[in-house]
Image (cartoon, rainbow, N blue to C red; front, side):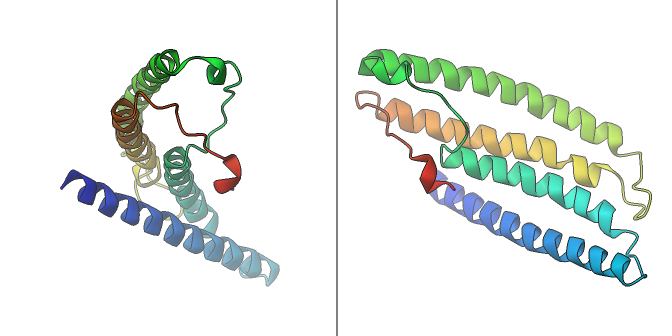
Length: 167
C-alpha cells in the first residue's frame, strides 16, 4: 500500500514538474513576444518567478530520486561494505536533519510571506514560497525511501549511479 502511494506521489510529482515547466516556458515566451511587439504582458515575469521556484524544487527531488546530485565518493568507494553502509547512514541522517530544518524554516518563510501580495497578481507571495517546504518535504520522503532501501540491502555494496542516466 505504501509502495502504491509512493508510485502515485512520484507520478503526480513528475507530471506537475513537466506541466509547470511547459507553462513556465510558454509564459516567458509570451512575455518576450509581448515586449517585442510593444504590448508587454506585465504579470508574466511575476508568474514565471513563482513557477520557477516550484519547478526548481520539484526538479531537486526528482534528481535526488535518481541519485543525480553532485557527490565525490572516491574514498567512500574504497571502504568495505559494512563501513560504507555506516557512512551512507551517517550521510542520510545528516541530510535528514538538514531537510528537517529546511522544512521548518520553509513553513515559517511561507507563512511570513502570506501577508505580502505579489504586486501584479495580488496573490499572496506564499503561493511561490510554499514550494520550499513542499519541495523539502518531498526530498525527505525520498531520503527515507532511500534509507529503507539501503538498510534492506546493507550487505550489498551500494549501486553505482551513473550520472549520465540523469542528464
